[in-house]
Structure formats: C-alpha cells, structure tokens
Image 1 (cartoon, rainbow, N blue to C red):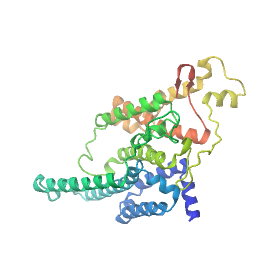
Image 2 (image 1 turned 180 degrees about the vertical axis):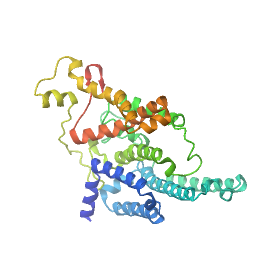
Image 3 (image 1 turned 120 degrees about the horizontal axis):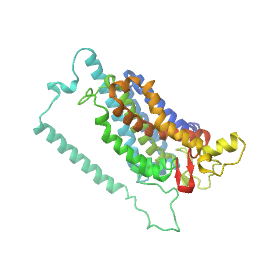
Image 4 (image 1 turned 90 degrees about the vertical axis):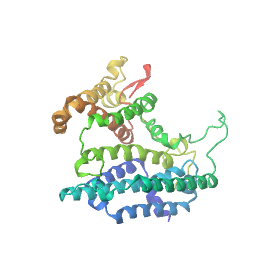
Length: 358
C-alpha cells in the first residue's frame, strides 16, 4: 500500500501533474476513436471511484476529501471525466455519420421530443432529485464556516473558495494586478469574443470533432488543463505555506523548500555576464522589455507568416490578430509556470520601483 501511495505522491509533482494532463489531452484528441469507447469512459469513472475509496483509508487523504469545502471538487472530478468523455464519444459518432453521407444525429426528427410532457417531466424529476441531494448534503455535511477572522490566528493554508482556486494558483506566478485583474478580464473578453472571431458555422447545434479539431483542442486545453486542473491542484496538492504535497503526504507545517527564484535581469547580468545590475531601469530590464514586446507584438506576425498562415488568410488580419493575442495571453500561464518550475524564474520583467512586474 505504501508503495502505491508513493507512486501517486510522485505523480502529483506539479511538473508531472501538468505534463500528464497535457499528454492525456493530446492522446484523447489524437486517439479519440479509442477514448470514445464505453469501456474507456466507464473505466475512467471506475478508476476515479476506486482511487477515492482507496484514499479514504489513508488518514491524510481522508481529511482532504471530507473537508466540506472540498466535497464539491470530488464531484467536479467525476462530472468532468464523464462529460468530457461523453462529448468526445458523441463527436466521434457524428463524425462517422457525416463521413458516411448522413447528417448529425441531433438533426434527425426521431431524436426530438415534445416540450410537454417530455421535457417538463424530465425537468421536474431533475428538480426533485437535486432538491433531495441538497437536503441530504446539508444534513450530513457541516457548513464550512470557521471562526471569526482574527489577525492572531491566520489559517494555514488560507485558500480561496474552490471556484477561485485557479486564480489563487495564478498568483504564485504573476503579480496580483495580472493574476487578479488583467488575466481574468481577458478570460471574460475572450469568451465574449469567440463568436466574432470564430465564424465557422460547422459544429453549431451538434457534436463533432473532425470539423472543429483545432477549436475543440484549444477550448479543452484552456478549460480542463488551465482551469479545472488548477482548481484540483490547489484543492488537493497545496498545503501549509502553499507548498506542494502529495495526496497521501502529511501536511507538515514545518516543511521548507529551498528555492531561489531570480528575475530574468539577474540571470543575464549577474549569472551570464558576471556583472552587477545596472542602475538604469531601462538598461537593467532591457532583455525583459524586449522579450515581452516580442511575445506580444512580433510573435503574432511571425505566426501569421508561418505556421498559422492558413488561419490568417481565412480569418483576415483583424480577427486573426485579436484571436492570436488572446491565445498568447492564455499560453502565458503555462509558459510562466514552466519557467518557474524549470529555471526558478520569478519575473521576466521586474520594475519594483513602480510595482510593475511580469
């Protein structure tokens, strides 16, 4: 048992956790015919259930999953697995039908039902079931209310509500003005802009993957990898002092991790050039300013002329550059995470004199 727990603790290392998640997403899209099988979908749910049952008998894991704040995340995992698998399965089925010259199953008259009484009865039953679940939930689980706030007793770790844990995890890699204001605003703007950027009508009202492979891959990467996985990571793997802990590891408040996070300017001037940091802010942060400007303004032009030339010609310059800008902002999170994990890089551009750090 300890050997199995040790394996899961090793795999929960954030670098492996993130890498395995990306690998699973690539496999899911690439080998979707295999992933769409019923045995795979039900097998994933059974594995998740077995993992929860197995972990229940570990005192450390039990404390995490039975905390009232964390119970919704356990349910989120099962719902996420099921609906991602279900959408892939339905997309594969429709792709087979379209390839055979048939229309999507959603457009067949035989698949439609009347609002009354079919839909109303279904909604009524769902309402009753959800009400029963919520009533039982409120009776069995205590409300996650803690003692009144006091500066003398700060919770450790102090975590945001589960639906904000993704943003709290982003604070590890970005300044608050970026992680708490700019990036969330760009998420909202990006979701609003999707219908205007992506005007392809294929896939509207029915499941498909072959007709929307790139768009579906980007959405799943943003939603599953960059949002849901960060919530899971912040819930189960972040412990005291915001250190990483394995799911079966004791949350030791005295655990220390010897990390020396340095800025890009220190990497260049001190470690590579063996000189002190220049007194001039512009000279000191020249490489960081160049990297940020190149990432935001130069890289989209290069992409338009090379690997994304097809999309540039298809979408036009305005929609393309807006879409690529939003895409690069999304990718800035995994890029910064990898730089922190691999190089211990704190800031690419650091101007603490004006509280401006990227």
